Image (cartoon, rainbow, N blue to C red; front, top):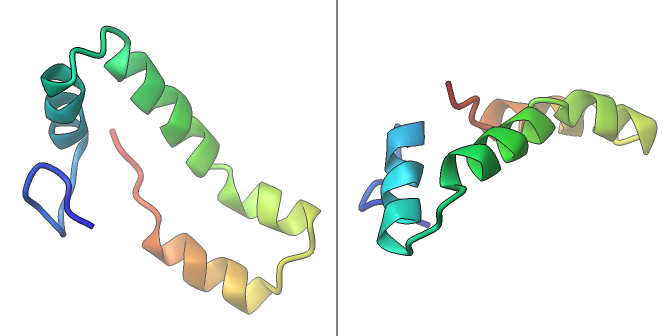
Length: 66
């Protein structure tokens, strides 16, 4: 999948560009909420007993947007 024409090094401004292009008035708030949830991946994975090795491998692929 590509975001704003990129497959790597995607950042918050790329997502905001998409939000603007679809006229999403709350893009920044939505991105922040999703980012906060994604940053809790380990907690969610542990709560449903995802194998720790798999949990950590998935965790390495998740972006932390600042």
